[in-house]
Image (cartoon, rainbow, N blue to C red; front, side, top):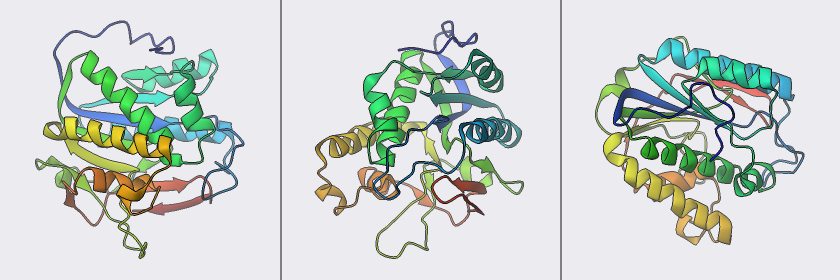
Length: 246
């Protein structure tokens, strides 16, 4: 696994404990290949996306106490960009040479495929380096924690998701931000592998025919989570260039 010349990533001490691990999944430089639901992957430029990812990292550091930030992005970046992102994260996995990951993030019509393979790689890194934690958060790069973000709903044991009540034809849960308890890590990893098998085979019967990761992940987890009504996250939807707080 390539770690993108991260000066902080030269071997981690064994059996590390981090109170709040935050995985930031990111793709700064996107391809011109269409998604299943959009002819473009992003209406934002690479420069805008890079600036937004920096804001994500700053936002996480500001609002989540004792955050251990693992940023993963497989874009080919400049040395200056890599150094800048390293300074804002604890670990930066800039995995550029993984052909399968590049296919998932650059060519697959399924947005969720890229998200899943990055999360799988991040979890493998945490397990390999024996990083344990109380809580694991996932946030999509370019999204921000709002000024009224509160840790309170996430301090309780268990997993936390929010359903998007505006989607009426399926049970659709936001995957731009959620929290997992360490006791669910093995189940979460297995759920990601199951979803990737569906993407690879293009067989979505297990998920009612839906290919949205926002539908698939809750089903694969067996709805093993608490639902809350407000995440405290500012989302920037790349294919529409819309901004909202959820």
